[in-house]
Image (cartoon, rainbow, N blue to C red; front, side):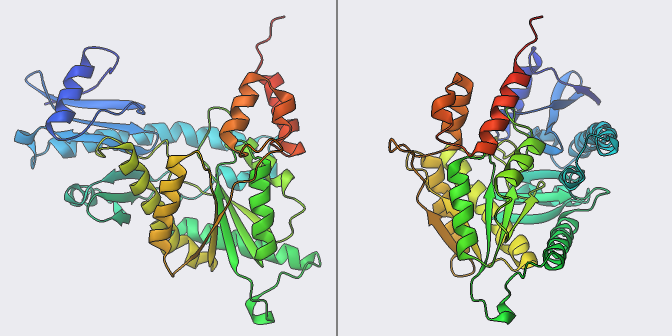
Amino acid sequence: MQINQLNLASNDYEKWRQLLLSTGLQPEENLDETWGLFESGKLIATGSRQGNILKCMAVAPEHQGGKAFDLIIAQLLQSIWDYQSIKRDQMKAITASEDIDSDITPLIEVPGWDSVFVYTTAASAQAFSWFGFEILGSVGSQLIFLERSGESGGLQSYLKFLTDRTNDWLKKRTDSGFNVPTASSGDQQPISSIVMHANPFTLGHLYLTELAAEESRLVHLFILSEESPAFPSTDRWRVVENATDHIENLIIHPTGPYLVSSATFPSYFLPTEDKITTLQAQLDAKIFRRYIAPALSIQRRYLGTEPLSETTRIYNEAMQSVFRDELDLVIVPRLQSDNGQPISASRARKLYEEGSWQELAELVPETTFAYLKEHSMESKPDND
């Protein structure tokens, strides 16, 4: 048997596709590397990775139960180790830079960054457990989410990271003279949460955040750590901090890898887009309900609607079904612009790409607008 890296832009693609189909899987495009195990020139097993997530693991039916799976996963783990070594060096260089803000460092060094993850079915979960993977969450037998912790620690380290950040934040607030209301002091308002991509941060995001802060004694705002092609996570973090620095009972956290990202969520063993969205939302809600909410004593989560988005409707319904009576879910109607159009990040991105600055200014806070103008200038090619 021989393991080779596959080039899916070549003739390797059809062999790879046929093997996936023979095991009931669908080809997926979001892949960084794909490896194949060959026997007598025939592809008998394959596996891919996107970042530190294993995907498209398939073994030909006649070779299942043998060593083919072990060989493929061992190769992928080595590949991820090499990838993480490069990333580790990059992180060290960034944190050592004199230009980096000290408050950005936690965003870069979130526990779990070097974990390995896999989404699979219940029937396949046992095979991954032999390699040190542990189940974090599941949606019936259709979807199992597993983690193999790295040196930074896994989910439990991330939860400690959140509680330590919160305790430090509370101490600094108290030392500065701000008295954060507590349940013991008679404040009956809940501790609430919001999860957002802020890609970019709009007036709709600001409205939702201010409303949550007004109705809560403390709000945990989670910004997706996932990198965006348009706006880097560190930039989004700074913009949100600047736009919300007037909200005294708001603490901002990075999500790390523990709140489900649409870019990394698997589609190769799920039949339809609606099914993917439903399972994604249910898994996200279960991890939040089981781990994150108890760690921070969160009682409520705020969501925004988007009337034109079927995906958002499915997501909100799935969250409601999972939270039930355990967490209060507040769904806030989307803020509208003066012309009656819903304010959304997707619309803001479109106007940004078109250079429609006057219309864009009506959708985003001044801090976001200033960043977008600067970012636009930096993105333009140098013609000199």
